[in-house]
Image (tube, rainbow, N blue to C red; front, top):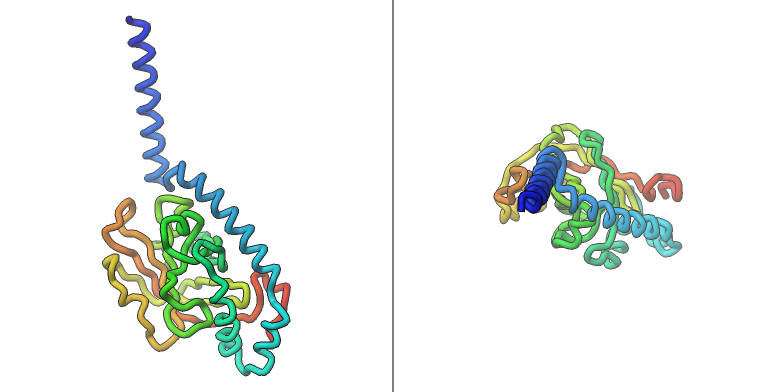
Length: 231
């Protein structure tokens, strides 16, 4: 019996240490198990995006914008041609925020499965290039926690969204803490706007931290800028 007690004690102590380590990692960074799964799913999304990029531009895309004047107008045509191809959970582009060292693939949709792959585009909002407010959500503590440091983004910082048809640079205007059901944050405001959202505070879904950014520049080239020049 003493030997059995020692074995049981060792097992319980070990299990307790594992729980403490897991909790510590979650507090300092993110939940470890979902992070591993998120890394795998983000890798899949990266492959999907690479494949998607390899298809651009098509001859039809170039023909569609041949007689269109102005960068914004051309981006709008390309965005409207691209949107019908977007399916739930598919990779659609990339988000880069230097302030928080973020460079990750964005997927279509904000359902549970989609957000396990990376930040997700709200399907009810436009995509970059279309008029209105583009909205993207991301996790803060699970599945790679892409928006873990969303609260560290500062006014004036640049946020770059790269789509297969163009790159869009936004400048951060402000931050707000809002209720989860506050749909007013995605309403049109008369200019191109980007809204990023994530749960707030950490480890809670009680509210949302929202970052608002204004569209400042459009570059008509594919991700990487080396496959096709601005028409």
